Each structure stands twice: as structure tokens, then as C-alpha cells.
Image 1 (cartoon, rainbow, N blue to C red):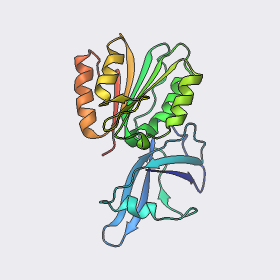
Image 2: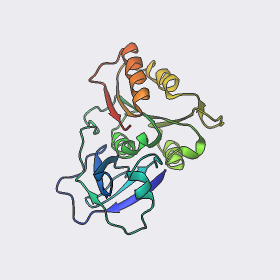
Image 3: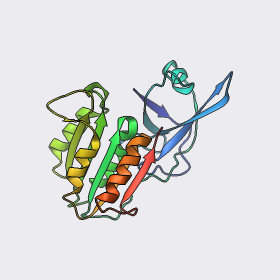
Image 4: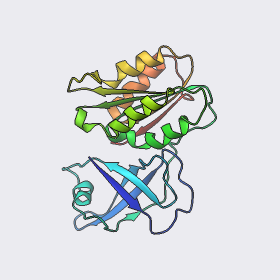
Length: 217
């Protein structure tokens, strides 16, 4: 994985909404125009500078090309877009963020917004295979130490570490949600994780107005 900091040639026409993505574009000699979508991972992006965190797929076309570029290169990109955005107005209701891998990207800005709500518990359940894969780990730890509203639950599926749960995210978020009568739940990750999470949320008694999904594979 790699973090990319981009600067738009001119300010965005519309303000960025926490959780949105942009579409990047390249031209391939064999495939023509190739486009890929990436969530903006900046905590509070301004109207011209922002950050992306991207995992390299060696079997793909786009990321191998992207990872070979030097700092300062130019790339075609879109305005911020997408409907997987933070839903304001749920003061005092727990906000639970569930993700795997680079699915944490849209949550940086969303969690920042959630923590502005008084008396609103915020949970991050973040699954990865190994400790070295955890994006923004020190940032999440520090945030949890500084803000009693925020709880950070790292989960590792293929490594045991004292600071993390071992296994998958499902057992961890289920224990949290079993204690809550109401919540706003955001889920971002691979399709298989989303399918199982949706099923579990229904079994826990949550409805479609309470959870929001974004798939990135």
C-alpha cells in the first residue's frame, strides 16, 4: 500500500463531502482509457489538496503503472463524487465504522465529523491480515488516547499481537452492537466481508436506515 498526496490544478467546483471518492484515469496502449475509483483519505481535505491510500494489484493495469510514477507527475482525475457519505444529524447515537484494508480511507474524514458530535460514541473496527498492513495505526491509537468518545479495535486475521483482536471483524463488531439499541453503521471493504456483515446486522436487529455500505473490489 502507498499513500498519494495530490493537488488539483484548480479548486473543486463542489465541496468535498466526507466519504467521497475521485476517479483517476490513464491511457493504456492495449486497453485504451482506464479509470479507477479511490476514496479520499484526507481527514479534512481542502478544496484543492487531498490524499489517497492505494493498494498495488500486480495483476492489474492501473496500480502497477501508478506506482512507477515519480513525485510531481500529472494525472487526469474527476471531481469528488459518490453517495457513501457521512450522515449528519444523529447526535448522541453511536457511530460504528467497520472496514478492512484500504476500506479505512473514507473513514478518516467521516470519523473526524462524527467526533464533532457531543455525547456520541464512535467505534472503529479495522481488519487486516498483518500488523504492517494497518493504515494510520498510530493515528488511531493517539486519537483513542486523546478522545474518550472514540474506541479503536484493530483486528488481525493472520497474526497474533497483544494490541489487536485475532480473527475477523465480525466477532468484534457483533460484541459492540449487541450492547447498542441504536447506531449508525458504516461498512467498507471486500464484497465477501460486506455480504456477511449485512447478514449479521439483520440478525442483530438493525435495518437499512441504520447501515451504509461501500464495496471496493
